[in-house]
Length: 271
Length: 181
Image (cartoon, rainbow over all chains, first blue to last red):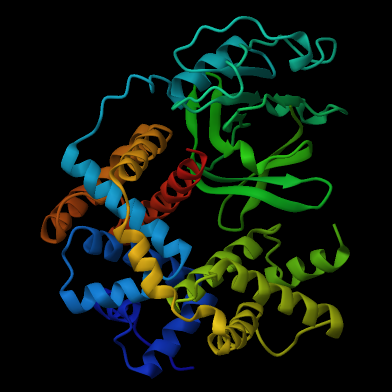
């Protein structure tokens, strides 16, 4: 196939709206699947197009083309919902939400300064909780100190995320039994803080693989490491719905070849 | 799991040893492909495509003469043609537009709340970048993005890709949040 100059953004917009000649459309269809860089560029333009639609910047014919193409699928509708929400937020301005004083940076630094190896704790924002039953924690003879608070009533309606957080240090990787994280009912997300040994990378991909099936059940790409006095850490938020009771391997990759930088065995127990 | 699946991943990696990353990325590209083709069920069609490729690999023992990604695209085209001939996709677009038009104010509020929550989970730098990158109107965005590229020391293309990846993370987070509420 002869080398062709990269298409302009305007050409890709026409492709996304379905107004290119059939021959070009087929060529870009193929590139969108076989060429990861082209696919990423296309996706970026798709975001801008969704914004243009949500903000009323498209002509009427293009609006109709966009609707026909993108509202057919759940993915397109999710794109539109986000575009509309971003536009609405910009019109309204940011809302001061007192429920979000917690930041990854502070939490990671605090947790890593306070603990030597691993700490599992459950945080319910802005709530002081009584101690949890001991059955909900990791075995004290096998695990370091545990700091945790109990969730409020599992079924109580709450607008706040309910999460458990776990900090993993590389030193634990050699343990025969992996750290165990108990996820109480009603938990919406698991926040992982992964401490890294020194390396030259700044951005990482994190995936969670099911040890039994060898399948990745969750993945996030392009996380920036946070520098703390104890070294670099990564923070990742995992929807609790992605997890089942079982053994997992959290893997951190980086570099052009996506080589494995760290891996952390983990046992999950859903309550 | 099965060694068949491992063999499929190894073939898809084409020697790169991505440890499954090539699979998830190919799946995502196929989902986007089917979505752009106005398919109502792009996830399922992407699953079907990769299942057929894996089956073929298992049956034949090897697929030669074509790059893995290229072969996935060839199979995806067949899956698309079959879908277009099926009755299940008829009439989807009008129904979907109507769905959007009936979005209620409480639903919009929930989205905004989810958006604020998900933004709150990003690193401060990332939050600032994505809000700035996608702010303003068409003309104003050009200047904003030029300034952002200078501030972060990124080329316009690198900035675009970083913002786009962040936005996909945000989209996934907001969609999950909406389902929970």
